[in-house]
Amino acid sequence: SLIALNLKVDSNELPFSIETFTIAINNLNNNGATLDFYWENTIVSFKINTLNREKVISDIKKALNNNPKSQDYYKAAVFYLEENLDINLAKKWIDRCFELRKDTPYWMLQKKSLIYLAYGNKDQALKIANEGLAIAKETKIKDSIKMLSDTVAYILNN
Image 1 (cartoon, rainbow, N blue to C red):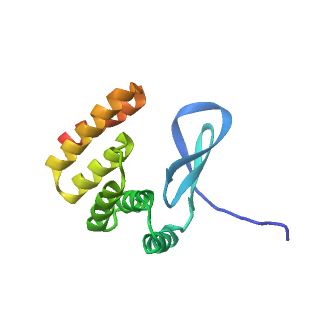
Image 2 (spheres, one colour):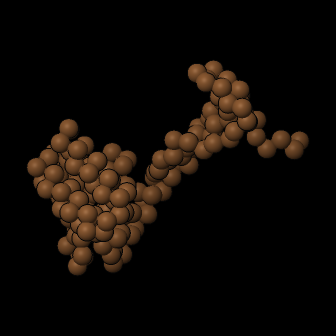
Image 3 (cartoon, rainbow, N blue to C red):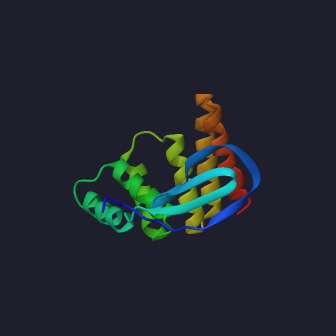
């Protein structure tokens, strides 16, 4: 047989109509996405799992035990934050990242502030986010300023 994949999924009714058949990859995250098919008033959606969480955790351990750079600590901390893993390790790694850096990029400060918030240190998270916002304003890049402004607002409301 030449059939490589056979799926059975439920269809759902859309609250609106679509004129053209559309295929979209949505709900992207570290562990997969959904593949969605839209037509007329119908959607069919199925999950695609990458099953890479354990592999990434293993790769992080290897990287951090082999002459790690600041970027290695940053990526590890962000992954642990996004995957809701050990926030104590995420905080330790983001702090180590900044110890090794000579600069303080606003996008890294944004993630650092979210790690501090998840760690439970709202005051420090707000201070870090405001520092990032000040640096972002210097760039005059609207999207960056908005990202940090949204982060400050998020911290204030959580």
